[in-house]
Length: 360
Image (tube, rainbow, N blue to C red):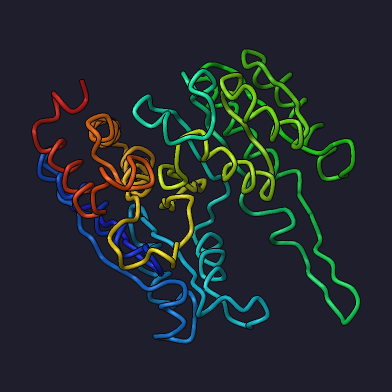
């Protein structure tokens, strides 16, 4: 049975990290006896240059026909004018809408081999395992926008349905973890947050009484992530808060290049990507960290293809490679750093050695 995986390399380091992840996925297919079909599409700045649009219709059709979408990154200095009518990030937002994805899952886990890459003390990093669930379709990013010479506004708007569905996913996910949901808002100031807190409280009481629910203000969570990150299990929040908090949490893992994400819909293909940007300053140098993209590919295997053992094999092979000191300069240092392609090849080789060893 063929499984179509759409690959959207995008801009900057995107082509390099997606190429490394493709090698890993090919190793999974060979080792576990699957038939993956890979097709590439344009998105972002490169798509603007080629077609005038950040998300060509052909790319949308490819993604909608796929089992899952693996994205690199979009953007770069040549398309950075925020007043330009067509911008690379519009392609990503349009793709999220086209796929109907509403929840972004961002796991943050610390590895002993990377403690030295984090600015935090090792005593704070041991045992950190957080899953952020970020709402993707509402909030200030998608609200009505107005601007004139002396005034600008961005509307922050949420519906009950948007809040309920992402909260339900967070509660359901927590049931399979440690059973604690931290709902993050700014209910002391924002009306949207007051609605968010009201719905979270009702869902927790009526539908998920077995899950412990905590409410927390976003500024307090920003502080606690650096003071006591182990206290968090599942953290669920609105769009902008989730964007900011997960970038902050990347310092726990040692590098923003380590963090994967999965954007899920009620049905249909998911969208998988590392949380970092296109990093144009290092594009083409072969030093970009592919681990976030490779771990995103693992999430694609798990959530879109239902291949749990294969996903675990990719994750374990990635952690083993890092444990052996195989990584890019951002996590193992300039003297020991390996090229992007070599890191991907090492992880693929670990998978090819055998699924029994890789997932032990």
